[in-house]
Image (cartoon, rainbow, N blue to C red; front, side, top):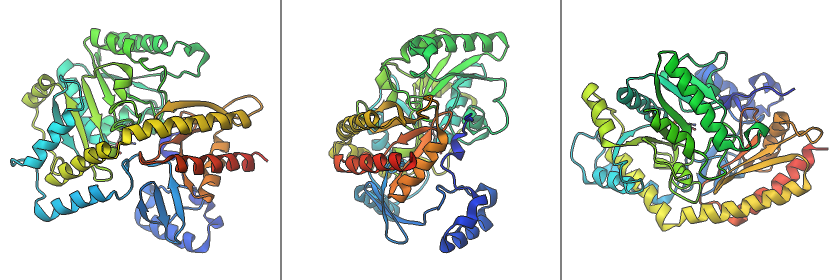
Length: 445
Ligand code: PMP
């Protein structure tokens, strides 16, 4: 029997197996544990001592080169020279808070907001995706005077007290609090879920009724618009529409968490919600926004922000500094100049086709989902088609031995989460496909 996986535990190094570590690695792991204690989480059965990275590749202390299919932070490529140069230059000139006029900050906000529907015309900058979601919850509560949120079963939205509460996948030993209603993601694999749009809309409606009936009141539906920790659900495009209509008719808000799909990863649009033809009330941003410079943001309608700011003072010391604006502007410039949305679409289609071909050959490969450079591939037990997280773990470690970095997702931890930097090429895709083919064959013996 397989058990449910917690998203933060996937692909994790198990300290109780440290006897099997190579000697140098063992000392390094012990040193780290001495400082960071229980909060130290490392990837892989043999953790990697990573020293540098460039483009879609990372290099360890021994000079081994790894192809990175994990990292959506260094989205335009690790250590991209345009971003590095913009940040370094700005650091030598001015790095202060946002309470002065500054051309760079204003220009960045305008350029970013130009990528959104017209009504989403205000931006608040934060340092992380968690902060952005925390602020989004507060803005939504201020607008609706209600407290209840609807989230998906394996959602992860971040680490503040309020946001951890709407992140069922991070809660180890308990269900979320009573103001949070958990529903199934629009999972195209479930038999009962053939029409996943309708199923999702019905679940949302029932949760709205429950929240309103319990006196908590319905405030907002928040989803990661590619459902990454739930297992990556992108199709059929448009499946969010009827649920979002229901939310807005019920005087609630729809919050699109774009920390994962945002900044062009899906290849078809800058933002994941656009694939579904919906306009959120609030959008939250993070990870790829500064290509590694810590940045997040909330984009919303002016009247929502107005109401919140009348009620509460809000200030974030490090967010939206001129250096953050330089990083953010450089990311937008690289996305455009290097055609990275187009690359995500072209290479993503090529890679997905390669994975489909692999599925023909391997009974271990189940469903394949996703769009652009965000693809989920289920690893299953060929005997009965059930999720096989142990096999996923073996495959991830075997790929690592073959210098490929990749992670898992989904409620059962059996979905390979294929999410490389957007500069990933067809040649890189071929390297991965060959290594995956070998890893599947090796572990299946
Ligand atoms: N939302 C989603 C969908 C995420 O995946 C994450 C991080 N994994 C967050 C929010 C939180 O972002 P951060 O770690 O920058 O706080």
